[in-house]
Image (tube, rainbow, N blue to C red):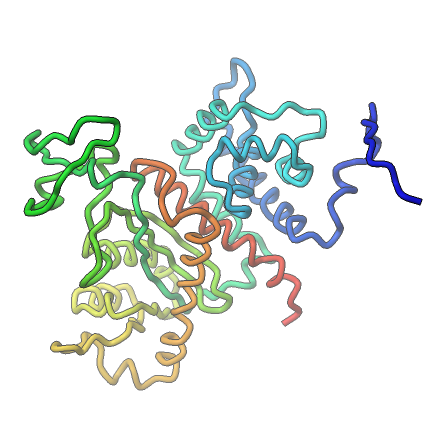
Length: 361
């Protein structure tokens, strides 16, 4: 018999959200790891809030909601709040009951900005990696580093002379402006929309865009990100960020290795690594020049292994740009860009952990 299409809404629901999520759902493992990490940051959260006044959105729910935004490629926080309103899986992951009221998008954004003051994204990444069952997946001796260009949320029309000169745009909301024949550099120009963005080109023959740089440090055993930072775009940013990211790991008594592409093959960078007892496993750049490393490094079998594994860091960058929404930044200013990039790298680790923890090998 054909069923009726007439729906009758129930006044009460006796099914718990916990029962609506299948037992083997990957978000169960992710939520368990995220909750344990957030409990470890409870003291950090207490320092960000006043003991008096009206209660705000719990920071744990803020972080879990932002993780969902990265996992499910949600473009804006307004769409994220709307999705939490009607999606039971989202409510379960964030920690909201079926009848609880979802926050307003503006309130959500203001409370999220509070977490910037406590550097919560970097501390959350460290808390995830410091868990016992996650720590055993990490290598403490072999690492790889790389950087990627991230387009800023700023139009080329906003890149104007710092002294206020220049031809004003044409009439209208999005007036015409001709840049042909005009020499524009970061020394003489700055973006009026995002002053931290820098005009930078990815390579020869590529167009210059207002951009930031994201840098990540990967351990070589399972390809998890153990350090992340965003900086202004420049020719030296990758090497400076690499030294800062490897510094905490260079304090170990045993010697460690650091893999990298040809951009890291400079005499100063290799010397800095060796002074920190770090063996530079960087690709040799011998095009019309002499490489900073020689056969004393490249003859070891571990060098070839580092050259092969270091490319896996591009998987994290690719996921962050195609899924987590980092192809073009949603925020302006270096602090917010650094926050979003670090949280995206943490989200990349979390989506990989269910399979890694389930693998008996």
